[in-house]
Image 1 (cartoon, rainbow, N blue to C red):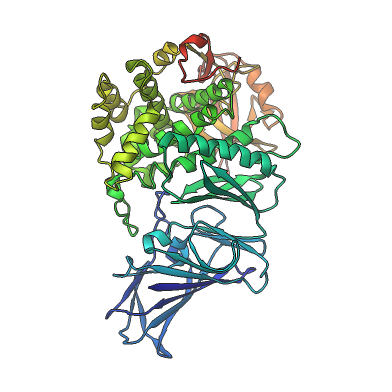
Image 2 (cartoon, rainbow, N blue to C red; image 1 turned 90 degrees about the vertical axis):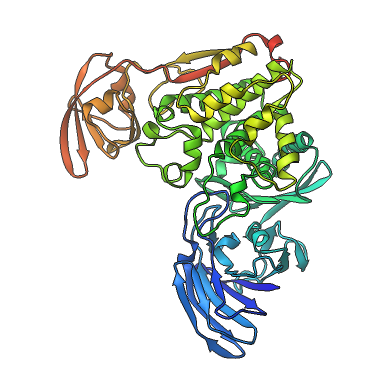
Length: 589
């Protein structure tokens, strides 16, 4: 048994007190902390937040030597050893740890040192109330050994791998419970909010029921949505029987909002996405992740499947569960198609390369990302959509991608075998009458657009390409006033001008010599700001040349920009022949 005691000791200083007790240490016992957290593919060096590490044994100070950035070696002792340290927690995200006078959140990848050679042993975690806030509640999916529900107490995990897969949320929590498919679920909120929790839990129940029916069984006995509410934020991270979520206050529908809106739909899609991961990455996972190597990068070219498939189903299942109609679903699908097609990134990188290089190129995107990388989330979702439509067509609508996901989970997830790079391709070949090999090989390893429009037309979906209102708004919605010219850059408008965020290769801003970080202050000697930019863009036609004044750092530049023809970068999808939908979508009337 390895035991941890954790106390939020200094809410103003954002410090957790942690002690680790090792009953039987080996000679030169080593301790280490993960450098990354599963599901978030970036080396984060959590050990940099450890303060004051020291050890005692039999009442005496024990020598402890740091031998790597995240690894320590203890001096020999024939008695139990207790290691003491503090962790600075000021990252309000789903990935690490946070603490202030209002709430706390932590993943054990940030707080709990691993004991080398003893990671297979059972772990106990004793969580103590902060002196300043003994009334706080506790929410976690970690099995409880003692203490009342949602109170402080002792928790247990079967080993270290399990220990780091149970996040904790503490504070003045709002806790709602609901049953889906006979399984207890909890929806937990921290932070100031105005959420209609009855409406939200009812919608979550429909989402969970739909997924549980799809897979027929759950890899968990209960499930918790741990939700941190902030003014502006978004994120989610999957765990074995819970998810950690960060959302904006506006994303949670209130009691006086009756119609579905985009913000609430986005939140439900996030919940649906993370819940789907319970099967697709938490149990069914790449063989390269069995087990996770938490001190270094674990490479796989399969994230297109684990994130792309999940990204397809997160929106599709909102429709399948009856939460959004086909018009809302097709708009989201148009948004995804527009995002993939707008930049040149998909012609520079395949989705398997994007998956493999998640650690650098995808998780450390720079201003050139639209021109150099493709999202394995977005393009992976389009590949999943294409497969679903092809399977339905080739099987006369008897086989769906949902059926395939269930079969893959049964064969490779429930059994903990894991998937190799060619598993999905070879598995799809064993269904009678199904031939998707050429499509899937091209989609995964080539750098081309996916031939999706013809597939959608087979299901009665009309696809139109239109000019968006500006470069910031390509998506699945028709523009009331389409742009007259191509600017070729994403920007942030303010009273001080236009700050360039991204420049698209071979478009107007690129040819003018503008770059990310430049701040445009005038076009044709007239000030540019958030009020005037729309008027300025409507003043010109393709072929006009203007003088642009912009700052690069503190240097004023004078540039010539020639407006080009605007691109039809918005994809608008609509149902034209409902009789062809064949159960893929359900028309609203």
